[in-house]
Length: 403
Image 1 (cartoon, rainbow, N blue to C red):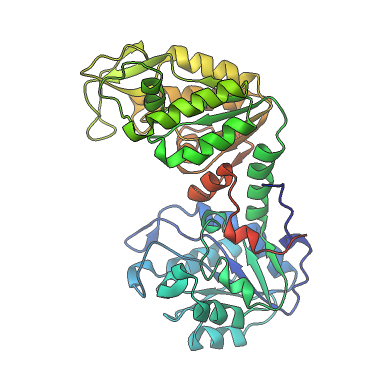
Image 2 (cartoon, one colour):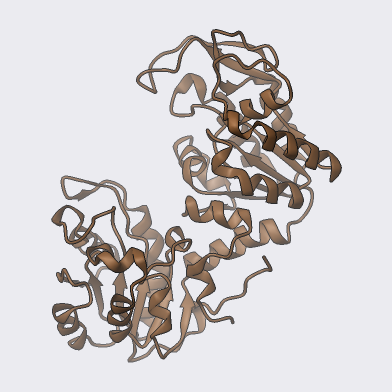
C-alpha cells in the first residue's frame, strides 16, 4: 500500500455549493441522551471550515445497527448537541427516507453557511448493501462530497463509497480522515526507524494479516494479551487454561519462523499474571501470582503480562522512533490486571517517537488510563485501523479523488 495522498477539505471551493459530509456520529446514548460526545467534537474542524468557506453543509452518519427506521437510533440528539458546540442552529431533517422529500425541502431552503443533519443512514436498509438507489438519492442533494468518517472507511456503504459514483463535483477527505491517513499510513509505509509494533488483545484469528504484514514492516514485534498464549503454546510451552486458539498454532509457528528469517525481533511475555479463573464481574477483586510464561500451572490461566515482561517491552519501546500499538496487554478493565497495559502506555508516553494507537480497546485503555494527551495520534477507527495495518485498501478512502 503506497503512501496515500487524497484531496482534502483545506482547498475545496464550496461557496454556494451543497456539501455532503459523511461524519462518524455513532455516539453512545442512554435514554436518548448522549453519554460521550467525543466523535461529534472530532468532526467540528471540518464542519467549521466548510461553514467559513460558505458551503451549505449537509451532514450524514449512521448510529447503531438498526435494520430500518427505528426511533431508538434517531440522530435528533446529535443535531441538538452539534448546534450547542457550533453555537448555531443545526436543522434536523426528520426523514425516514434519509434523503427523501422532507430532507430535500430543508436543503432547498439553505443559505451559505447553514447546516442540516440528515437522519440515520441505516434507516435505509440498502445502506449496508451499497444499493444504487440510495447512493443516487444521497448524490442528488450534493454538489461536493467529503468523507470524514474513518471508523466506517473499511465498509463500502452507500454513504461511504456508493455516493461518489453519482456526484458530479469534487470528492475529498475531512481533517480527521486526513490525519488518520497521514499517521497510520506513514507509520506503516514510511516509518522513522527503529519501528516497533505492539499487538495485544484476545485472539490471533482477529489479527492474522496484521501480524504477517507488520513482521515485514517493523524492526521489533511485541505480542501480549490473550493472543500471546497461542504463540507461547506454538513454541512448546505449557500455558494451563489460558486462552489458546488451537487452530492457529501452525500459523504462529510460521510467524515465529518468518520473523527469524527476516531478522526481526519477536518479543513474547517471559512472565505472566495468573489466576484460577477469569474475574466475574470483569472488574471484581482478584488474587494473582506471577510465574514464568513457560510454566503456567495446568489449573491456572494467564490474564496479564508480568512485571519483568513490562520492563522488557518498555526497553524495546524506549529505543524506537515509530511505535504502533493495537490491543491491550491483559484484562485492562480490571485494576489488578491493568498493570501490563499501564507499563506499555507509560513507556509510550515517555518515548521521543511518533506513537500511534490503533483504535479499539487500546485506544480505550490509553484514554481510560490518562495517557491520551501524550500520544501522537489515537485512531478513531477500530476495524478500519486494523484493516489499514493489514495493508488493505479501504473503500471509503479509495473512492476519494487523488490530490
